[in-house]
Length: 257
Image (cartoon, rainbow, N blue to C red; front, side, top):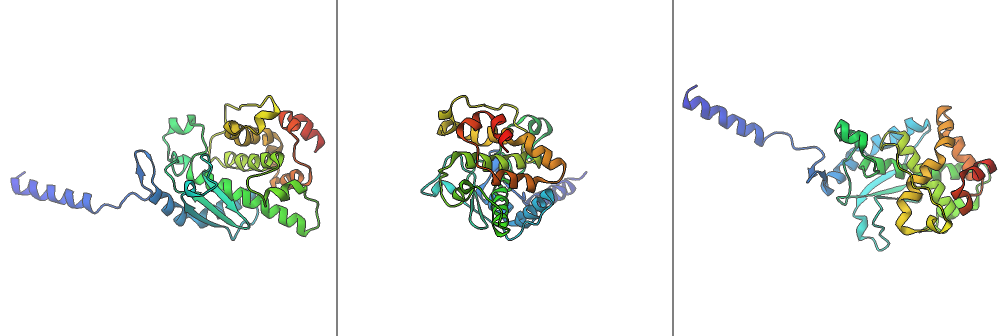
């Protein structure tokens, strides 16, 4: 190869590098960037809603998903990754708190072993479930069906004043993203031993997300297997939410249902 040929090839490589397509959803220091999260939501908003509709075999529409820095809100929660607003608004934080945009982006070993809900798509699906929960309540009320008043209260008051209804609603949301494969099934579940632990802020994630989804798993699995998850949620909504004693002992609650 002549010196001139080498220079020409070298220059062509530089040009190709310069004009290669930029990373679609960028990372920085191994985590999704704020700009990447904004773009990811903007591009996939409609697809997320369609995918959720197919999963629950029901029509989900008119959901609006945006991004913002939730840490700047006056009532910010350090664990919060997304919010649902009545009647159909969802905000996903664009803070650099996520592991990846989608769990499927991880390598085989890491995907298999990681136990977390900090994926952008998982949080979107979790918040869409809050909307679906609300939609079912509105449908039940329209059809003159009884809805336990505690569930109506949780939709109007933030933070929740009724721990049992929050426990069930968050448990359903977290169960759904596990069932959809957006996060791994939690392997380590902390089971509360005392009533005081249920409202302990330091145990919020362990109890109101991980334990709550485990608490509902068998009940919702049966409904999923028969395509009746909506009916199962209606059963939960018709009944008074679990008392603190029933949160500690699921058998008492499900026998009551």
